[in-house]
Image (tube, rainbow, N blue to C red; front, side, top):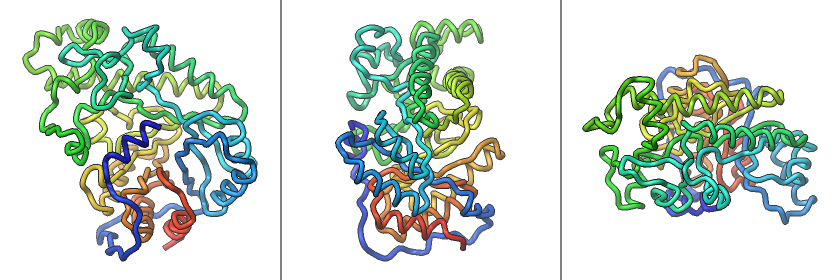
Length: 361
């Protein structure tokens, strides 16, 4: 997947053997979840060539080590069915507003978001070639995505839907990525600030009476910011109604905290009507240490006020050793996470770390 290539380019660390420091902070923590109620997830891009025997062994092992569900990035009835037989929940993981399929680009280039310079990401994708963002203001986009969600949820082996890239393009990248692209983003640069298409401008003018094109610093207009937060929120809540019509849950992978998500990708995920949320608390992306996982979970849990569960998303290459993974898991659970979501190579050592991290203190 291009996404995985993108992540590898960051050079954010690999699993290694060594000693970890004591990262548990001496501060009040939220009660640890009962480990019999925890739900732990794995993000997977299924390999269609793998045999049934291999899959049975893997998913049985996942279940035995505390994994309760899988987010599958592609459809594969064999994977889904075998996982379900081992007692795992199966959700179809879909790219939402980042849609670069060639057929859509050719048929509807007008659906794609336009930056403050007037460039469309249909023809001028920012950062990487696969960053092709649809505009959430457009009802045609909402209908297109609703159809995609319905298609997946109509399959009997799909237990739920998992949304990814349900946001605007990163107006500011995570700080550790600046060196990757040679960009210093101390402000919102116009080439990464979306969306300024005619539909967005007209809807904002109708709502607020403001022509966004006449403002000297539109990126600093608070109403314009909220307009974009609300565009994504309306889309998510519409898709949540779609999932509810199938009586199936809907979850989403989001940026690590409510503040970070709003500031750099216009995600106001606290106001989404989901079944659960999976913040991607990838600490090294933000040049933070493992202790920040606890801080991020605490912020998210407090902001949600119990609206739905939060599963802490951990990026395995960010950890220097398995002891750090255990520490990260414990920090997340002690700060109120209802479980963990793992992205990376979930090998036997990682599964052992999951068991150790989720055991009662």
